[in-house]
Image (spheres, helix red, strand yellow):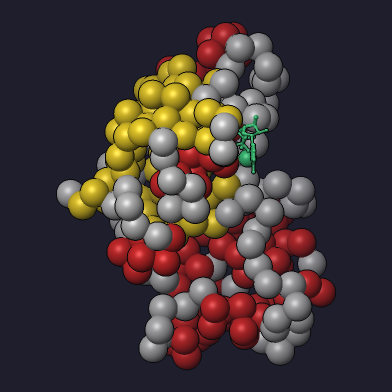
Length: 234
Ligand SMILES: Nc1ncnc2c1ncn2[C@@H]1O[C@H](COP(=O)(O)OP(=O)(O)O)[C@@H](O)[C@H]1O
Ligand SMILES: [Mg+2]
């Protein structure tokens, strides 16, 4: 579905990612894990078009999309839920939903958002920045449903949220996966990510150091060794 091939890239003079080969098969959940600063966010930005790779290619199904801009990739079915939520705090919930809807589908999108997260439907006129953290994340992540994407990139969706809200976020991701949407998820809750994933990649210092089945990482010592000992056993 989504494939990164021999990709290098970073920011200005800094190369962050090297020799990245990563494949998200159709209807599958892939977890991308690694310590802080490993390059996970940078990798998702390359996939969604916010950054252009220095070398290598990005494919969506059979199309080479390396040269396409983020909004073109969005129309083709890539949905990126960025780190830090990426909502418009000064706009209302309704306006945020409209911003993240495809043209002509705004009304339908608002109705569907309210079905999945009723609290958003009750607060359509409220300024998004005044929602609770959990509600803001619901507003951020609902675009993964209302855009009807083929593949969703999720960057640390559970960061800073109460456990009960995290449950809701993972339930939502699980429902998307059941519908056949491919997911590439970056997560600090390693155990939850592994429980949902069909396949896992570990990223360390900008390189893929492990690719395999979640069950291969069940042993905490094995996991820690792949993570360079930089992440604990959670
Ligand atoms: N906008 C930026 N400009 C320059 N360097 C950056 C920028 N964003 C991130 N980096 C650097 O790229 C590396 C990878 O960062 P990032 O992709 O955010 O890692 P992760 O998401 O795994 O924590 C880090 O060394 C970070 O300092
Ligand atoms: Mg990050």
